[in-house]
Image 1: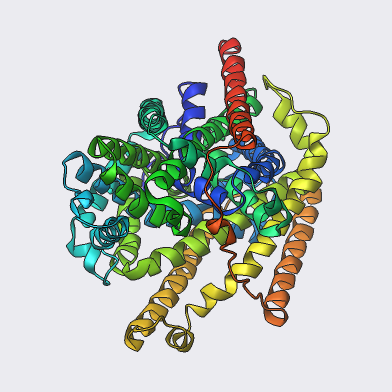
Image 2 (image 1 turned 60 degrees about the horizontal axis):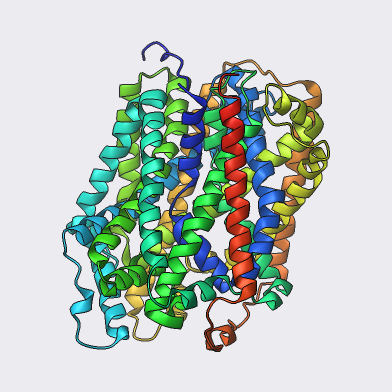
Amino acid sequence: MSHPPHKESWKSRTGLILTVASGAIGLGNFLRFPGQAVQNGGGAFLLPYIVSFILVGIPVCITEWIMGRMGGEHHHSFPNLFRSYLSGIPLRLTGAIGVTIPLLIYVYYVFVEAWCLAYAFDFLTGQIHFADVNGTQEKVIQQAGNYFVEMVGAKENGAAIAGKIFYATLACFFLNFLLVYRGIAKGLEVFAKIAVPLMLVCSTIVLAKVLTLDGIDKGLGKMWNPDWSALGQAKVWISAAGQIFFTLSAGFGIALVFSSYLKKDNDVVLSSLSAASLNEFVEVAFGGMITIPVAFLFLGATVTTFGTFGMGFIALPAVFALMPGGMFFGGLWFFVLFLAALTSSVTMLQPVIVFLEEAFHLKRRTSSFILFLVTFSLSFPIIYFNKDFNALDQADFWVGTVLIYILATLQILIFGWVIGAKKGMEEGNRGSHLQMPKFFWFVIQYITPAFLLIVLGVFLYQNMESYINKMSVDWMIANAPPNTDPESARTQALVSKFIFISILAVFGIIYFLVHISLRKKPDTISEKARTKSRLLMLVIAGFACLIFGMYKYFPYKKAIPDRFLDLLPVQSIQPQGILIMVGSLGLVTLLSIYCVYKLFITRNE
């Protein structure tokens, strides 16, 4: 063991904002958001989306920054950041979750990042020729699908190890660790200042091309024309809240760790709002204006049948192959996706690096090398067992969905009920260039926690059973698709169980390491906060029992998907759609401009 590493810091407020924003800007902005919108009422989806941004997005972002700055007095790793609010097992559980989430999400996210890099390379070098097929549009899509499955090694387990995608993954590992090794100021901050503007410029070029295509008004109509009847469905509101939750990386703990490097009088309210507004601008202006409109223009109503992966890596490659100049614009688009993925993945490593260095007094070289070995070892099963994306899907559900929901809910409950919403707001307003409205304490203490608990409860109730069933050999064999070999179904079930057990094992190891790191440190929590934290854990335990009881005695029955909307005649963008599109773009643009203006006039303060 060596001496503790020197204390890092941000060189500029702009660098911090761009780094946090770049960590949130990812594939979900460009692929998940438009897919969610078109499946949940088109332009009407923006109403619950904006409501969720106000009630969930902004409060969670601001509270993360405030708690990070407050906890920075006790170093910067996730367990230490909560020492003033939790103790004992609750502190160790929360700290372990905070370290586990970015570690395990990075493990599979870097693999998807490699897909973007490989597609960008193949487009720019002219290796994709779907349009050479002499046949129908369906044949082009089929060839694009076959290319995707073969390229990422999803046809058979082990295929990805033998293909070029393995080398693309190694390249992504190298780039990520090169950046994180250089530290916050020289690595993450410098890269964010280059990558974010470059991403915006490249996205603008692709957007300009899309908006000048003949007939694009029908594609815009598919995305933005509203179906107001969708607002009467609970799933639309749940989907909107979930999208806001995922797009802002709420529950990752990344913003909390990064803001811990701020001084007591540094602004957090304006900075957090600026990072969130930049993320929303990218999502609405580029994700909402490019993906669905151009895909619908070339592929028609079939775009609604693609999931996130299908939209990004089958539908859009087919579109670019059919588009004039598609090799260049396809390469540019996937380069944008690669930058978005890289800026996200590199920020995931920082919380784990900080934990290793603070807990065990390691130097950056040692901690980076250890983390490289750990993450690559954990990534190998995800890459190897990639048939039908089974391992990746399991990891994304349990870590990238369930755990981050839990952590975000814990954070907002701790802020509102252990710290106290009013006290937390006073702390946040100190040194801030933008004061939070006085009524905001009520939103943070009551509305946002209730909103999160409802969304988490409904999500688990609707989805958990299917993922538990996927670990059952008997269930997988009984429900296997036609012509599926029983041995293949058995293997898929065993892989699902292996991934789940591996996640539990990694969490157990991290919990032990967190316990070791906190063992000799004195408690800094007050007796009042200790009592509140115990009550909070009882509430969460009761909530978990409620969800389990509903799952056990009132199993969720999936409704038959309503395909009626896909059969409606396609129209060009209507006045209501134009109003929603312009209003949404105007809202995120004005919010971003306002934040930039406030940042500019307070740059010397």
